[in-house]
Image: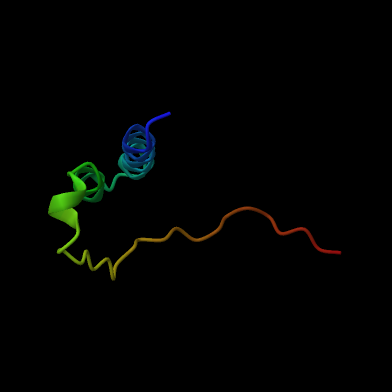
Length: 59
């Protein structure tokens, strides 16, 4: 399989993941061609990480 095709598919899957989480701006940035992204450092200081709500298994 073509390496470029695999990279495009990987970028698409990452973009879908972030879009589902509500970060549409980052999803659009991921889908830009690599040439536009290489010189741009995307500072994501506010990652809006959700608190983990799953119960912890205690041994």
